[in-house]
Length: 193
DNA sequence: TGGCAGATTTTA
DNA sequence: AAAATCTGCCAA
Image (tube, rainbow, N blue to C red; front, side):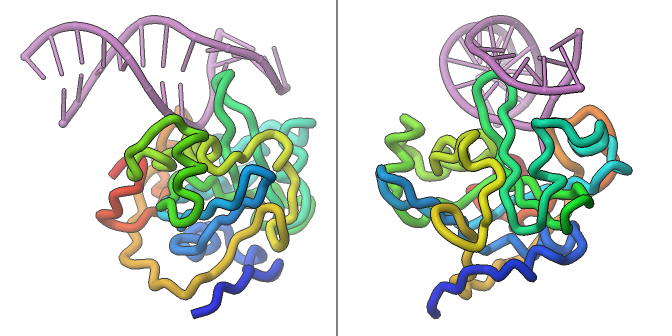
């Protein structure tokens, strides 16, 4: 089956549904170093100002402005002094919700991903939000990019995603009671089962 | 295999 | 001061 880039309209759906629909889709990044890609196997929904764990709950700031922008664009932020996290904006400009991509199954450009990470094991390359950004070469400069075209986009390669489970989100200290993290059951590339 | 400390810098 | 994290080290 030929790969199809997800159209902008894909991102305009309730954020929880977008998170589930993103599982199995393929994130691709092209840089001077080469091209790499991975299938999304784990994601978390962040549901705007009413969700205290969502960055937009503290208003629009220079850091979070991309989440307040149009759907289908990237929201990338820097965390813990050394990692980046990659999100997909899922609502129109002014409605600040997003899906955090938490883990990928590496598909293309495996050597490049290994080099960037300094790790050999395939299952350790992108099994976490910080790891996948390092492996894919996603940094500050990707913040706000339109995900419907190069150099950073998401495509559908027609693979059946598999069984989806919902669990509480990880790495947060508030609103931990909601099962807004979804992943492919039993998948070895997920950050935490 | 699981828990914990340390790394490191941006943000409000 | 805390952060939507990761790694290495230690114990069991």
